[in-house]
Structures are given as structure tokens and as C-alpha cells.
Length: 120
Length: 172
Image (cartoon, rainbow over all chains, first blue to last red; front, top):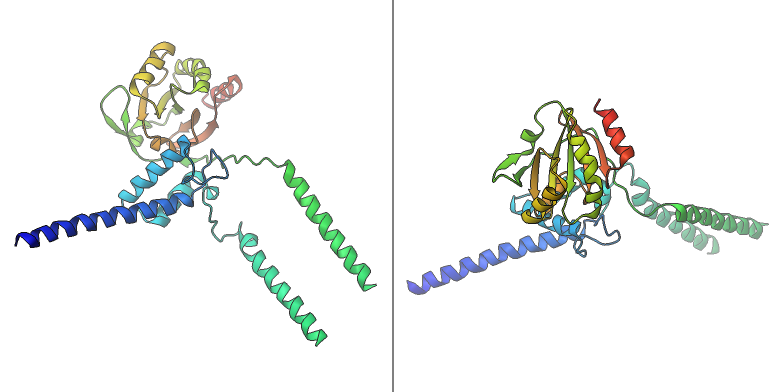
């Protein structure tokens, strides 16, 4: 019985550890995708500016409160605009950004295949 | 003929790219935020600096009069510069000043106000800098003019005489 209890306690400790670790992973993932607005060119994850430190604390708090990843992004987007995210969403301002590479790829493909067919 | 056309095509593409990048050189690469005005004030709970009490932001901006929310800190040099203007503004009955003390210690904040005067009706003590982010702020100093629960103007950086006059004309 004693051993069972001990196992149960160990299991409990490990499961909490896992919970903490997954929160930490999520925090790192989110802060890597947030732009530090004071030290531009750096993510919040990389930066140690006062602003970035506060952002990290807030991300932590939001995760604790049970916010999902997208909810946290939405929260920051509402406060600071789309620019705060490194991964821009597909909307009318970013159509060119997302579609141009595909378009260029397709045009390139057409040119290559046309030349190939003509040469043949 | 075909080669000539290709040459013209390539040169024109290079010229377009050159113009594009040359114009880009003149653009500032410092991002200024979308000044999100006409937004409702954020809702949050905060501790006060002088009294051991937690308040909700909706209670701070209750009435329909004008409020100036000022984010400040004792370690911030520009805050010192704008402080005399805030002291002047606090004499006006039309506007109430609310402070957010950003990433400071209580002792330093209190001695700063003891030295230069306290223009604020209430001060939220924001040790972690989290409340400032709720407002979409960047750092210190930053000020928001609020009327009827809506942010009508935002000032990033210290207030100067020109902006002070603008605020006075807005709250008339």
C-alpha cells in the first residue's frame, strides 16, 4: 500500500511537471511569434527590453488564465495591430504577400514547360 | 528583334526594382503604431499606489468628463520634463489626471511625487508593466485623453507645450 502511495505521489509530481513544461513550450512558441516593438528586428522571446519582459509576463498570465494560442494573438493584435505578429494572416492587406510567390512559381512553371515543349 | 525586346524587358525590370528600393530607402524603418483612437478603455483590475486597494478601470473613468491617463515612472527622464505641464493641467477642473506608475518601486515613485508634486487623482501601481500593455502602450511616458469611456487621443512620448495647448483646446 505504501509503495502504491509513493508511486501515486511520483506520478502526480511528474504529471504537474509535464503541465508546466507544456505551458513553457507554448509560451516560448507564442513569444517567438511576437515582435518586440521597442527593439525592432527581434522577437519578444529574444529581447530583454522592459517592454518584452512585460509581454512575457502577460503571456504567462494569459496562459494561466486558460487563453488559447489564437486568443492570445488576438489579444495583442487588438492592442497593437497586426504588426505585432511575425506570422501575418491572410487578409486583404496581405493577399499580395501570400499569393505572389505562388503566382511567380506558376508563371515560372509555365515558362519552363513551354520552352521545354517547344524545344522538344 | 526578339533579343532586343528581351533586353529592354530586363532593363525595365531592373529600373523598376531600383526605383522600388530607392524609394524604400527613404522610408523610415521605425514602426509607429496605429494610433488606435476612438476605442473603449480596456478593462482590468489594478492596485493603487498610495492606498492598499484594488480598483477596476471602469470605476476610475466613471463620469463623462475628460480624463488624462499618464504612464510614468521615477526612473524615466522625459517624465520629469513633462511633469510641470501635468501639474498645470491638474489645476484645471475639466480634466482629471490618472497615473499608471510603470515598473517602479513604491518608495521611488512616492519620493518622485514628493519632490515634484502629485498631479494625479489616482495612481495605479504597475510593477510588472502589464497594465500598460493593456492600454497598448510602448513605454514611458505615454498619455491617453479619455472622454466618456472612449480614448479620443493618444500621445506617445513626453507632452510639450504645443501638445498641452492641444489638450486644453480639446477639453474646452
